[in-house]
Image 1 (cartoon, rainbow, N blue to C red):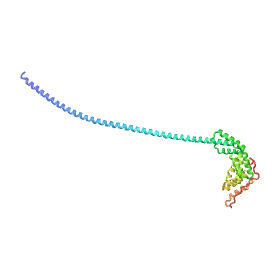
Image 2: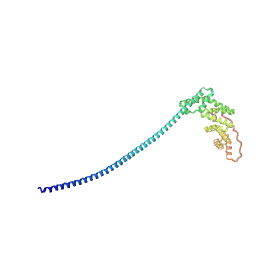
Image 3: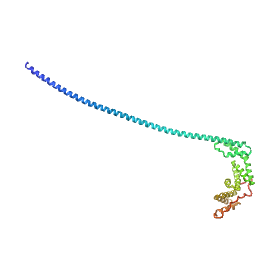
Image 4: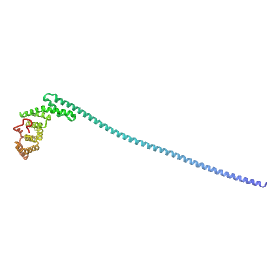
Length: 318
């Protein structure tokens, strides 16, 4: 055994050396691995830092985008609300304008009604308090009054009072007008019968007065003013005994005013309607002149004389 001991020691030393070498190599490998791991960790750390930066930028961009969307939505919502508020404001202003116009209209109508009521009171006072025939001024004023703005009761009271007054005073005015006509006092006839017609009398009396008034205008050579009452008489009573005479006056009045076609129309109506009239030849002569336009112009005709038996009392003109 003493001889084997060095050999064993050498083997042990050799093994120890080999283990040391292997340990050294393992240490070197471990160091290299650690260095590699450190390098990789550093790369990963850098990548993580870059990723974190990109994440921050992305997050910031996302927040900014979201903020922009919110702002845009808020602006759009505010604009919609503003437009709605503007429309509502315009609608309310239009309603206010309409209500103001209605209020002004109602105020105007109320003022007009108040004015009409006051005028009606004045008219009624004239028809009740004035002396004698001056009360007819109230009837004349009633004809010019706007009755549509008065209450039914007020209208009824005015009309009843006017009817009573016409019966009371109108007959005397009509008789005075006819008396003035019989004495050929044309201005007085026109004044009295004009007052009578202004009282809006019954249709029968109005037609009587229209005939005499138109005749007075005709005899006064006021042909233009004679047309209206004579036309009313001719169109209102087609069975009147003196209607042919009224047609003669209408024919000549239109001739004097230059209304040749209208004059021929009245002449034709008189010729066809009254074959036995004493004025038939005048109708025929006028129609003959209408068919001879080249004939020598004739002098204006003088007013025809009234019929021999002129009506003197109301109603006899028909």
